[in-house]
Length: 333
Image 1: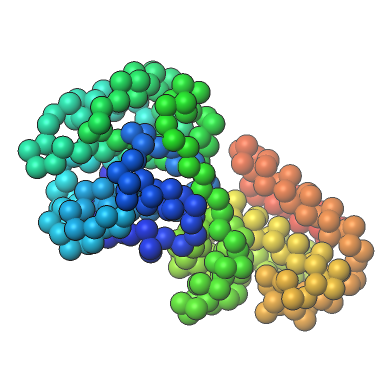
Image 2: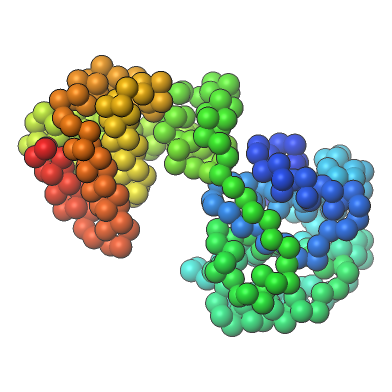
């Protein structure tokens, strides 16, 4: 269940997604909201925050297209006392048919204070086939007092019949430069902000990444390994074992390799004379020396190998052996 305090949310506070906000706020003003929505887009693009803002605006008794945050209904929602709302998360790896049946039972009860009932399915693509079919029967007979919001990274993974009965709203990644501008205006360090905005789809996700203790450590260790691999491979292997494989960073290998790929892109940019586009600008001196010591085709090949390494680790290849082989290939150039 989502933390109730997060319902202190408004459309105005959500960065980007102007088209989505405009559609929803027009529906609020005109009283012509859909009975079902699919919020589809990458993680971190603001789907959950937008769902919370919509729910709050619908229940609000003091606003029209934006929650006032002051009325009794807003306060009830913020404190988790809105009986008309059901927010469903996956139970383990999936949303199960039992959860949908409980939802249907909950929607059948009449509220004594507000006729509007809303249910939100987060990670809706994780519904089992049985759950999805059960939900479909519910969507096929919509009532005026029930609204569905399905939040998903991949709306196309839903049943076509579910898609056809809901209004699709696409959430797109926010412009990285704009995200970086917002976060640096907040005082967050550019050395972490610049890579973070290229690894996330929205300001909130990037802010959370930058604020994670492990992310700064991952950047520091990645740069250390890059330097050591090019200068002293045995030392690099020891550092890999100590600072990645046997540390908390082992739980974040995906992002660790993503940082390495961003670094390689910087090396290609340096080869092309694009210093103004560097993400690791604070490392310019040594990176420039290394970039110019090899042909651009070498750095491009390394980047392609790193992407392949990322895929293999994602499909459960041994992280240590995969990284060691890649570092040997990098040094061998």
